[in-house]
Length: 206
Image 1 (cartoon, rainbow, N blue to C red):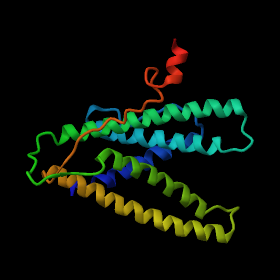
Image 2 (tube, rainbow, N blue to C red):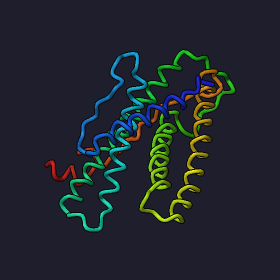
Image 3 (spheres, one colour):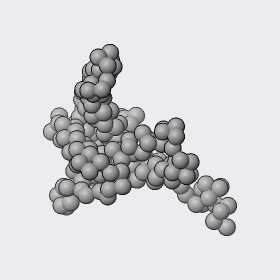
Image 4 (cartoon, rainbow, N blue to C red):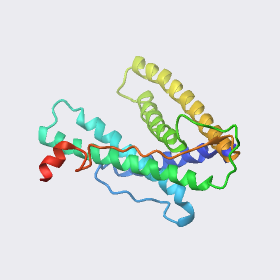
């Protein structure tokens, strides 16, 4: 089943999160442990999780009700930039899969999936972060037993979701590799960061 691709992906996601958490600084630059040409897919998966981990921290901080407005504005722009980088990385992942399976003979009965492999992996990466943080909540020394119990129940649901999603992704990759499914890459066409497409940015550019 596509060599259980998601098992390796989850290990890389967890490694990226662990590496990021060693410093604890949201301003640290990406140091990708997968930089060799033959590790291209690993490098993309690692970068994807790194971006998600940073953005998780951004989203926590910006919800501080006492945050300085100027700091909040700067953080919102970082979140926008991070979102764009996340999208770009997911699209590179899909290009990888498209090239990997480009020589597969597609069966006449083949169908297209509602979601591409990379965007499913995007959900898996974020789900893994939820599991990471929910697990912390189940072991918080300053939390009540009721809080830890509720978080344990939520953690069990998240783990089941991860198992289901992992199975679905591996099955999708298996079906693509056997010609039962075919894929296309769809660009997100985000408009709000583009100076030509966002009317506010276009006005300020003139």
